[in-house]
Length: 430
Ligand code: EPZ
Image 1 (cartoon, protein in one colour):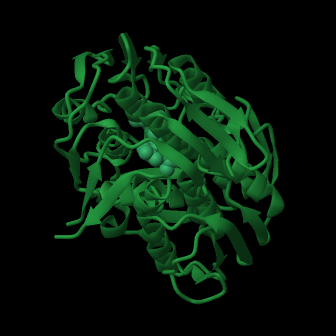
Image 2: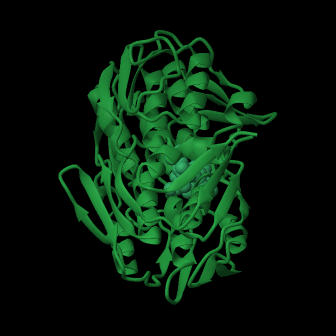
């Protein structure tokens, strides 16, 4: 199993290209199930989660060609992938495939909308909380679906004549359930209004792509999304938006090590809240023609309190990285996690590097220390693992991060991007 060895202490200086967003690419790829025409996605990142979803889509009958070639492996950044699902050959998403990644459960929406039925295994994914699927089932039931859970599978069936538009208010904001209801409603009869919808940029990206495919959607990015159902969707060409979590992660890395890095191809508007928080912590961040410039020269890291919230609040997917940064601040800060109940697994690993963090329920109290010291640590989930990398970059000596397959799910060419900016990071294969 691969590990990552980091020799800490170097400032980061240079340019880091920001990849297409994993969490936008996944629902966009799933949207290809809604049409028999070709959906072409540009700027698709090369990540383990994307490769896994390619396998799942292939199982449903999606014909996939990468950069014009019929293969799923390519070394190029910013891949263009063509998805063509002439017919859905299988409406079952099996446990062996779905258990590895929660987002694969989202195929339930398009399969139900296009074929009138689906059988999808209950999902897996990062172990950051119980992560139920009740909101998916309630919102699909609102569109008229009959639902039954049997042997670890969710069986859904549309009424005769297909799904029917409805007015539905989510009792809690859910990114995934909003994606799924949005996709399902595009092919339902009549009007659907989704209230208390997730407002994440990835929702807007999916809506933009669906509109290019012929869907009638308004309000994406606000709490109320309205969809006028259409009888079919066509193909389209769409570019995946930049990864705001990768952007925020590297911005925090620079804030932590000091230095001057341009994050190329990204946009500040995708993560205003996190950037404002980083400014309070002492980083200078400016928008440039090519992206964002992040600088921290000389001044120390100030303590700042954060509370994770749905967009436009501070993202839970940057919480672990921010905690790593705060572990070197000049005072005491607090991090409150409100989205997932078990997203503090990085705390004990950060402690191995010398961080002083205590937990009380959903709040962490971080007492900044003047230095961290390298140690062997273990990645526990995707974002937690990158927080250990960031901490390792700023720690004295060597940090060895094991279980890096978590990192490969969501960070494209992490070692290469950091090494180019002067970090000493290498992958060690046993
Ligand atoms: C998406 O997960 C992201 N994944 C997550 O990123 C991200 O952390 C999360 O949104 C929150 O921003 C992708 O986009 C692929 P939710 P999702 O449904 O959709 C509860 C990463 O590291 N809930 O918005 O699964 C749920 O338990 C990943 O890239 C229900 O109670 O998150 C959580 O407490 C990890 N019932 C809250 O809602 C449901 O039916 C928000 O979850 C669904 C969710």
